[in-house]
Image (tube, one colour):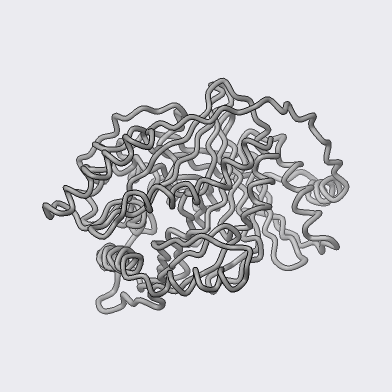
Length: 431
């Protein structure tokens, strides 16, 4: 059983920074921050999980069965991630591309200490607590001294795994598959990376979060491996019997001029290519959710609605369903994973072609980070707009992608990738 206690916080933003810096002493950290973005489906403003009690780490072999057993047996809050390469557990697929990061395919842990922030309150939920530990921790965090680490200021040389000419060649091959009818749409991704590089992960995360302020920001630390994410996208949420999926497809850049920015947003709404991208994935999501849904319960609540973020305008749809009572929560994820917005349609064909044309194993990129509650509810983001870092190997990576359809223009697709990559590149080059 967990012991819990609620405290009032005078300065929420300051407390969040103190809390995150305090957490850095632990080997396992998952910090999820909504940045107070106004959204319909939200339980907390921010959540922190630290200090491992039990954990599960595995490659893709029978990963979802292992997760189901772990979630059922633990019957507690568990936090962790699902890498894209769990596709190999769901379908007869493989991942043979280059991997410079070497993250486990799946990792979850049962934290001893949990912090839930909502408004100006913070709830602490502790396992195995010693006397007055909560009061002592709250006092320590509230007065935690944030030390400025001397920045190395060493220049980061960012390389492209796929160079521009090769990108165009690969896109032509992707388009040939589409024109042949092998697929309708596929998400094609490319990696940017730096070797022999040392960064301050928390400092980089804070900079990335400040310039992006996304609704699904994540700071994840698993020993020497880090995820610094400014994700705008929810993958899947379970709230009681309700399942919510919110795929993003369709992107437009922002402009400092209000009139031009409004025009760019309007053009995105009216763009038939961007709408068709989104609608194809909505159809895929509806089909995936129907596998675990009560008959007739799958609904499209919002179709192609444009939301505005610091860096881009995005087209988001919301699909919901009511899950059948006998379905295990992990099976809802297994039957929808990987998410349609990062694969394509038909999904299996798209994943095979993606594997053939991409140069990098995706790993945690285009996977998901989130948690399960003791009641079997869950909430997971999509790992995009993210920097991945293996501290031991001194390898830094970020990937970006876009949906390719019959109407795609390779030059515009390449430019869209650079827009999506801008925030990550900026914070790394400015370290």
